[in-house]
Image (cartoon, rainbow, N blue to C red; front, side):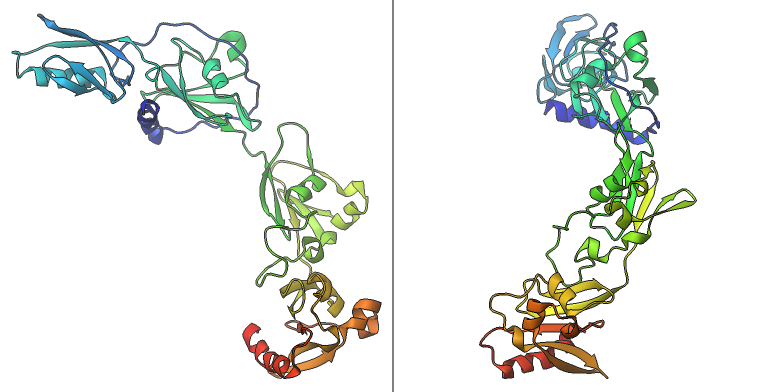
Length: 406
């Protein structure tokens, strides 16, 4: 509860602040500066764990040291539990003077923070650190202590941080300067330390790939075209969707991608890349990508056909043109053990009516005879019946099927 209360109070100030943009990456070292803790000012908000020294002018009985408990209140003579957490010293002073006026004439209250509690001395570390959160701050600490407590920087962090104060002010420090010179100033309770991501260190892979999108450039080393293909899943079968799912745009990325006509767009320059040649061993196609590059893999002309019945992956399949029955059977994973391949059929719409052409795919699967491997057209349906299925039921199904899928 202590951390949550102070976190809410600290984050309110973020809404009105602009975040500085930073550029370079640097490692986190270890360095500290010493200074006295801040006084109780109108910018500091009391937190659970703080010890307050409260005095009333001319009234020694009301002079007390009160610790703010976990509920955010203090116990004060004659008044009982008084809310304190989240208030400034001025706020609490006005509240006490108003409440004490029931017992005293014109009470004058003085409040100081004798000791900051662990929560009261916390700062908020956000952005590109390994464990963002709220961390206790030793009196007079510099930047290194809370950054180290947050696990250090991520590989995508910049070399500068923005510190946002409760007062609304902010300043930017370079981590390259802090360890050697102590630059960066002294942190105060409630400060927000923001480590931002390096700018424009990303590349994109678009088009006929399983996972198109933006990808981060590594902090060390380089990214080449082959790395980008792997990152986008083009070199591995997609596991996100079952093969042949109706409506699927990709059955196999390699099958439907036009690998020979890929390109890298770099600003206004388009660089042709032959991915097929790259996969065949042409290292010259494996160019180094820069931040902001876009690798585009176009789609081959495809024909949408269906494999239904006793096939392992029934449904719609997108095949590059020209497509054949063997291509469709391969995309569908072959036939099941219950199939009757001798009575397969190709259903095709002719003049708006379904027409069935019987096809024995048993010999085709066994011999791969190209003369018995018919070409397929857009919307064709290959139906493979099961053993023991009556022809009457099969033909009844086939007569209705085209109206369900076209």
